[in-house]
Image (cartoon, rainbow, N blue to C red; front, side, top):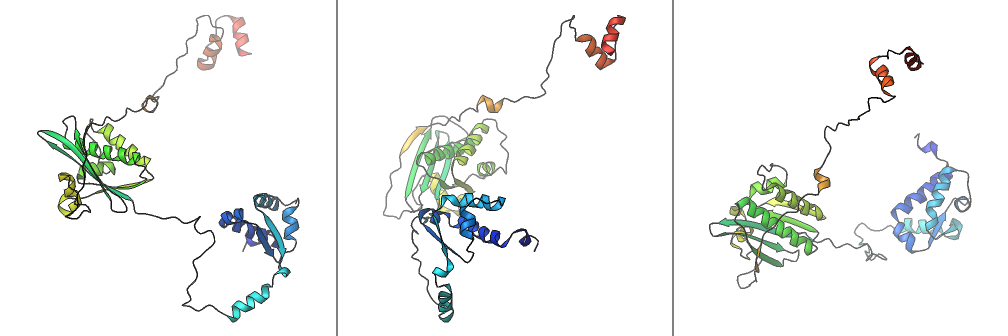
Length: 308
């Protein structure tokens, strides 16, 4: 109740118009607005200099619109209200969805892309593979032979980073990542810490690539519970292909080297000590000694000057 008494009736009407401006700004910018109000002085208060601070602020916000003020008597408002009261809309009535300019605000939300990655380490070499699944269930499969021998965890990070780099090149903004190595997945989710020094730069680089996407989630998929994860290890295309379909799998050689962190990010000040050296004959020394230690020079004349 207290807030209602802070506004006059004319200010309440203007505040209603400001609220409509926030919700219908796109429509009001594109068309000429015919404002019908029972408050006749509204036209003169909004379009002329006023003394009220609130009204002046609101009038400035409405200058961007083409508003024509129409008195309510020009429209048969009561006749329209009486007609709607006499002809209520049935409960099962289907409302028309054909709204003007609805294509401007139409957003087609598609499911996110999916990427399944896997890195494998064997005696004769290491490899990285990943499979993209588009919202339309199209399949893109890639396999890379890593040019250096490494651990299985390193191969997993290599596969993930190569896939994320390709995701950015393809301008994929919404991605769900699936991997079958629980350790790496939990490290990326910050549930586990990265203890091996050789994996730290790759972990940071993978997090950096994930943050470049508009929306990315990463999930663990056990091999024994999901045929898509099994397809990663074997680099097969059973993700969405039928038995009579075939797919081409390009194989390339690659090794990812994560970028070094910039010097500005690594350097920071810690326990900084500033040392000021002063000459022996500095004229400030007697004053400093007196202020810090209460020590006075032996010369009586200098004592009197310092005490002054």
